[in-house]
Image (cartoon, rainbow, N blue to C red):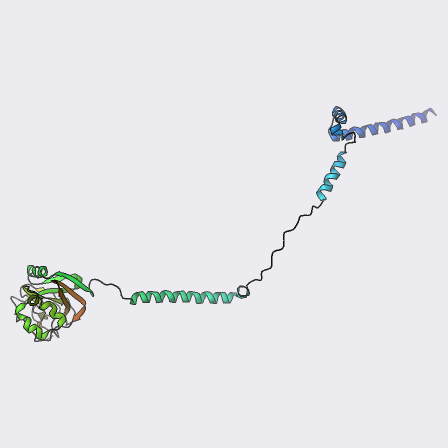
Length: 288
């Protein structure tokens, strides 16, 4: 009988110990000391006005419920439907390349056409091929005399020589108006002599014809053609005299049109009667 009572007491004692340990574990999990729990219980603001504070599990359950709660958000108004461009959608890869090729060809042809128009469009020219204002006639005649009767102007590829006033009447019978404008300037304007602009090329094969100081003629070094001081043929294989440029004299200023070349006088023309005034620089090339 005494043994049974002892066993019962031991069982009751074990239950009490287990319950106390469980409560201590809960309190330890809450992380609050006994003194802190006592102060919280005495404080009405923390104790909820006498109500029992929620346990940790209750707090976790409330947080999980708040996370799963769905808050409805008002949706934006729908955008109006805009139909796509059927032309843009319908462009295939082949069509794209074809249109690009046609566009590039059109661009290239436009550039070529613009360049052609720019090339053909009349432009202001200067130098050879244009009208060149050579200078004052009195000064030019002085320069010709200072250079032994021959003055070369490289910008116009021309020789300037004096034309004697005494030969003007014969010149009027042989030469055209564009040539005579300078040749008769001495008589018409009261100068010591007229002036003549001769093209530097030999009419035979186009060699540049230099002057010969000793003979006072032009003598071609290529085939021996010879011309007097005013470009009239005196010997050699040339088919005519030296070609010359159209001229004009306005207010004593000579202008030479290097774009207008007048063919030289025919063989046998000798308006000045000038013969070689000294040894020829090049022997006459008869028989060429």
